[in-house]
Length: 388
Image (tube, helix red, strand yellow):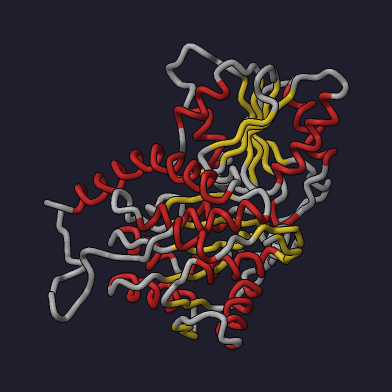
């Protein structure tokens, strides 16, 4: 049923449809409305779940870990410093191969204190063994949660999934959202059944010490699974399309790429602004396009390479910076062409940190700069002030 909803309310409704057994989260702006929505569903008797109030994000993630290990589907959400406080448990959940879905309402990392959107929080934990999706719209964010549970609990995967939605832009924005019927979600997402779980009637040890003789094999196993995930994600998004009639999710999305000579690569809600800007520029006869990264971990390297190999000028636009280096996505996109025959001009641009507006003029500036000198890490829309 289509409803006009705030993004956080849409996420809460969809998470409830996925029938978690345990929800645990600690409020942090701009994630708070999601767990408030879930708490309201519980209070109104519309969601039967163990809602565990905790004293920190570290405890929330630990609570979910415990639930998952005993065979109970769980959910949590967080943002910014909250995600970083979870970091120890984030790595543990992946290392224990437990299938959790977490919503990260993307927000800048302090200091200075900033509650607005960028991607520095989730990119910081990109190497933790979690699958990471980035949503452009509220509808896509909602759909990715259903697909995320299906993917995470797939016996070929058993890895946690982080759904990244831009704070305020998507968490507090309003859209008409198609909330699916419970029976359709039940058909798509079977009950959670963990074969190796903590059960006093069948004791086992979980989370053992692994010395130098076995630790590296555990990391190799996750890496091999990540490779498999690249073929499983399209399989699940195709089944989602057949079940719900919407084509969302997947690895990448191409927009006006067929004949494009200048292309922006980006993730998240900024892709909507980029698409509108591309439409305006194309009316003037200029061949520009967008490659949207939906799945950031595992990075769909071959799909990105095939999509970009004929493009002459590429701009990687990102809301994150590896301080002392370059934009993280820029570094990875550029590495894809090393040793290959194609040698496009690839430039890196940093935009929108701390929630600074990314306007159509910002996007047009990037397209204009693409025709100039190659740049590795240029900040767009900087004020002409000196701050130390």
